[in-house]
Length: 323
Image (cartoon, rainbow, N blue to C red):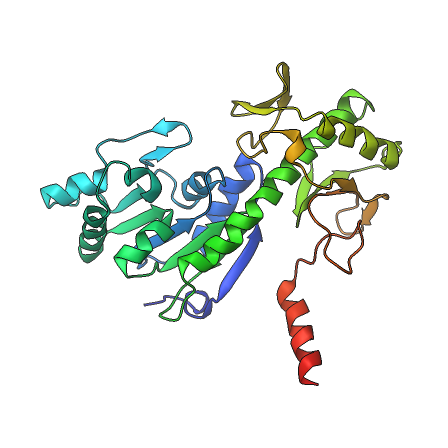
């Protein structure tokens, strides 16, 4: 039973998925505070490998021991299954990566363990919930998808079903990776070739990135775009180096707060371009450099960010059709 108006009437909420580790953890904390209820027993996460599900879960549930993550296996045997076999659920909250666990355990056993834990008033957090849903025959009380955006929903008997969220976030994740790699290459070129220190302040837009400066840098944006494109066209490999750095090519180590969230090769970045002017943000008093990736929607300009408010566009289209 919902404990607040937000829980009862939430249809869906959409956030930009941060590319940095600490911003993603902070978003997780905010989502837990805003949307999580003490009575939520089944929480599902969907999104492709490397999207940041584990970090989001750590932000939402501080102190929870994840059974596995990008660094490897943390706990074996799986605590949920171990307690299910012993018929004694010792923890209040359990974590389960369905894609990982299906390599070791029959799905019907996992389904029974989840059902039994919920009956005993325990909470189960399931990554790749879409793989469990078809057998469990029960939707999550909170369903969260992460791709280029983070989508938060409270499903009811009419949906949304996990596959609906999967179809959105799996398709959009590549743009988040492309934008992140393009952002770091732009920062690299700015620092190493234009002598401009990489700005610490940055934010997100759909299919792109934003770098913010206190003063307008004395650079030619056409030259910067050309140079970044030349680096992209070299088809350089991007590697995870450690938690705070990536490796560009075979030797260049470059600082990055989200080193796992990149395309594998620069040639995977599609249609990179810069907006050829610095935008002024009158509220934050900053000059903004905007970079874009991905296809251009028919009718839009090359230098116009994709429409972030699709529901408004669709509503206008429906209104025109009706009138």
